[in-house]
Image (cartoon, rainbow, N blue to C red; front, side):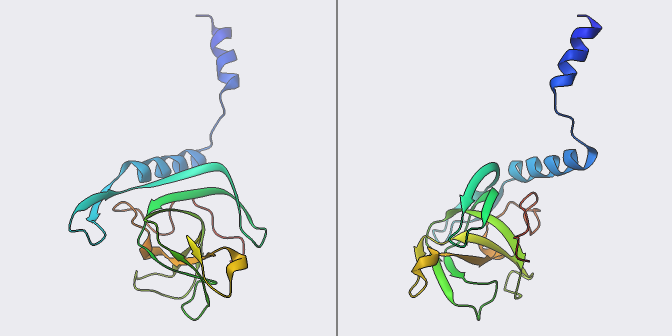
Length: 161
């Protein structure tokens, strides 16, 4: 192999800075570390998984555009208009594998922190059907792998924080 061939190959590879390589490494570690959790009331155990997805396109009913999400096993529950229990319910999450497009800080919850995730509920709640179930869920509803902190590494903070 000639040195010029090697140089030409290197020119086509994207170069990642140290911070980008560290963030990418954290995201890969997050995906590779499963944890056994209770089987959502079934008495069985399963490995919690979360997958960070980039270069996607989702848009909520308010016009916010999201290009990254995390798909995680989750508990079912309520979706709130804001990251607070005194906010109106906008939806219900009935599925146990869902996408979450960003995170924000809000009211403390039983998960022991103030991180909430923005998601689209599986069903909308009256009188907020026009929002199609979009809203915030507490971070402890996401079944993240053991040792993975909230907010989930690589998932962006919501634009309205």
